[in-house]
Amino acid sequence: NAGVTQTPKFQVLKTGQSMTLQCAQDMNHEYMSWYRQDPGMGLRLIHYSVGAGITDQGEVPNGYNVSRSTTEDFPLRLLSAAPSQTSVYFCASSPRSGGNQPQHFGDGTRLSIL
Amino acid sequence: TQLLEQSPQFLSIQEGENLTVYCNSSSVFSSLQWYRQEPGEGPVLLVTVVTGGEVKKLKRLTFQFGDARKDSSLHITAAQPGDTGLYLCAGLGGSNYKLTFGKGTLLTVNP
Image (cartoon, rainbow over all chains, first blue to last red; front, side, top):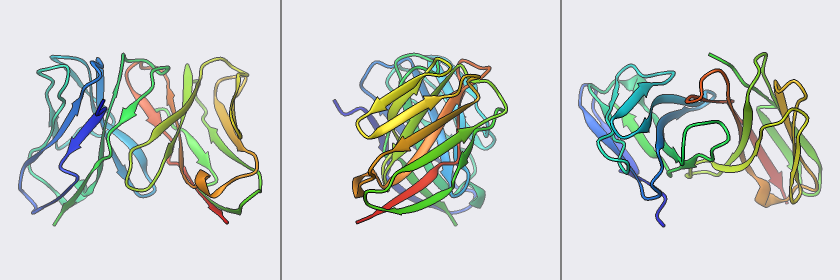
C-alpha cells in the first residue's frame, strides 16, 4: 500500500498566488487532517475531516480551505499565499477519529512563499 | 487550546547513554501518543497510552502515562545512533477530533 501520498514535495510561490496541496490515502480511512510544522512551533492542526463531505477548522485555519468529496482525497487550498504560510505541510489519516487511533502521515510538502 | 510542553527541547548524547524525555500539561488527556520523525519524513507512531499509570515498552524504549493523565515520559536505555530524531508527544483532550502536539525533543545520539 502507498499509505498517505502528498504532492508536490516542494513548491515555491509568489505572494498572492493560489495553489492546492494534494493528499490521497488508500487505506479507506475516515479521518484526515492537515498540519503545518514550523521551527520551534511543533505541528499545528489546520483543518480536519471526519468523513466525506464533513470538514472543520483546527487551530490555525485562516488562509486555508479544504474539501472532502471522496474518502480518499483531502486537498488543502491556499487562497492568496502569504510569506507567513511558508512551512512544511503534513497530511495525516487514521481509521476513525479519536486519540487512540494511529495517525499515518505523508512525507510532507515543503512550501516557500516569496 | 490544551498545551503539551516537551522537555528538553534539544538533547545530544553519546551512544550507550540513557535518557528521558518529558511531556507535561496542566490539562487531562484521554490518551497520549508518541511519534518519532526523521528528517524529510512525516512522524511515525511509536505508542499510544490510554490509562493513567500505564507503562508500555518497545524494545529499549519505555513509555509511561502519568496517574492523573496530565503527563508522560519516554525513557531510552542504551541509546543508539538509529534513535536520532525528533520525538513528539500528542494528546487528545476535550475534543475527540483535534490532536494537540508538543513542540518536540530533537535527540542526537553520537557514535
